[in-house]
Length: 454
Image (tube, rainbow, N blue to C red; front, side, top):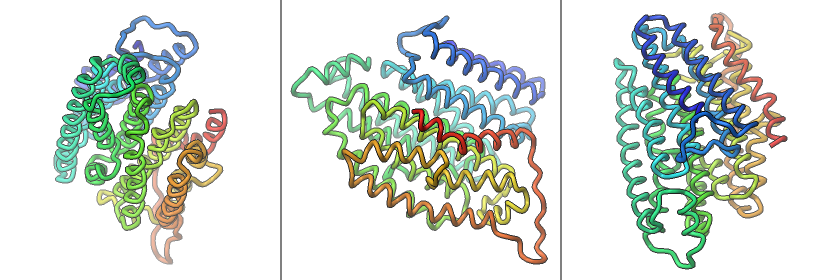
């Protein structure tokens, strides 16, 4: 709870400092707040001590890892996007504060103990992103992204609330432990419970962008400012999957046989829709959007298979995915192609070797190529699921093979040698973005050691 308060206060201070039109001070405030929040969580990991506590939020070892990863991703996104934020001095504090407020909601979603706090966390997470998605006021696609994200998000929230109401009618409680006790102890369950669980499941599938509820994702990723796309892909997805696993592993294990077949079908559909759609993309962020949908399909395997390894496996997988996405988003910011064409990455390794190397490493990690951390993430998820769902894992491996094709296609573009007479202008990298790329590249290259320890 202490870390949550620090992040929120950092967002408030950033708003007020922005009046002085000193973006460097805003950045320093945000970074300091995130570092302090991370340090407080590390202390709490070692010693279960907190100054402020609230029964609706539980910061224990099972979710502190997710919180630390969310804070780390948010820190990298804010530092990487600083050059973009400071273009509008009067709004720099607004942008950074909104991301910090959204992170506050993410922390609530990762630590909730009752459905009230889960809903509040979801709304605190979502509303700032609705605003940020439409922050490019002169871009029609940004306005379209904000509207689509808002309407689909509101629709999913309505389904979620309706499902929670049905769940309350069946169990008489909003607290996770009490709901779980009712489901475990009753031999026959009310139809209200099944309807509520299906609605909550549908809402989660909307939020994570699983097929057939994925239709908002490509347009929102494409139209939003690039750095906001990175935040959605890394932090928002981490919070959504952390909450998804937390709720379904805590409350609904007693009726696993009811919702598991539906989720299995959605996982298969999501993997194929994401991969087959990604094959024909020519815009970079749309490629990332469909790639993200595919990775949602892989991640759903961790929700299906619930044992003592599930949480660590999901954490490692999201670790690998998040660092890869942030690296690629940073590369896109450096390339700075307003039309977001993949051709803009042509010959990137000749224009800046480090940036090209970082992009290739991130793409290979997303493809699951060893010995990068993406390979270990997929290996842990697939090996944990193969005993119960061998056919599903086989289809996931097939989809991983399909995914390699479009990742390699982009890698070829990046590594393509400029033709004779074609200028290969060198790309300058701002110091902060260089640091972000270095951190992400090291995490991707060395993260396999973390995976093995997990």
